[in-house]
Length: 268
Image 1 (cartoon, rainbow, N blue to C red):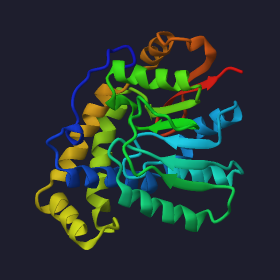
Image 2: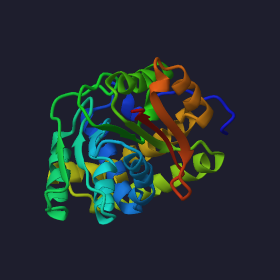
Image 3: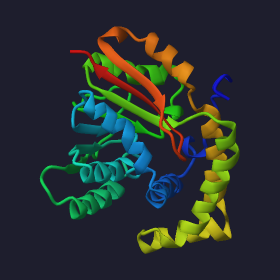
Image 4: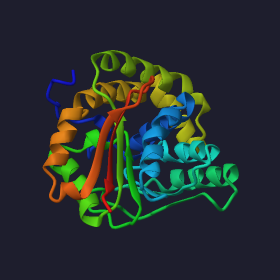
């Protein structure tokens, strides 16, 4: 599948017509699945590699959704003696979810060596002005090539490190993961913490009118069709202005999640 071209299609939760509450329930399910599967174990390795090779310990997470995996990654890195200061951002920030994640990380990481905050206003990932290592987990494939390249160019222009992590392109993953993720939505719905009205709405949209499972399955299939291959990432990097001013690393972490990464570090 690596040799096949990327297919740019639309995921349901990206549609402007998708109700905001449905989009929130969907991204909260994704964040819950990150916790359920301990994806941070493999997802933390590309960021740890970047930090070892000169990336800033101030982390600016782009497209954070309802928190995403970065708060979990921060905790895992803390256990390994790597300390970071994380800022969550999004084009349409879910401030309530950010507040919950912030409170949970404060309980788990009371030391001043680590912190987590957020930006409550809109942050465009292609025009970010916040200093620190940019991370984008599980969302890079949402950007068509011109916007994806603009995001990388923005990091180069600002001379800020960037770490992009998505799932590798694989026929096996495309056939297997949508079913596993949909099953996770069905199993996890009663255990997700929400205000009572949204909790009841989640149950209705999971078991009575199964909109959320269908959305997870459909968007998972489309996501794998939209993933960038390593060759496409390399061509994208080669096409950047002043790309030689950065050191670029592209690879795949071994393991169940198939975490594919692109790391860019400014040359000194």
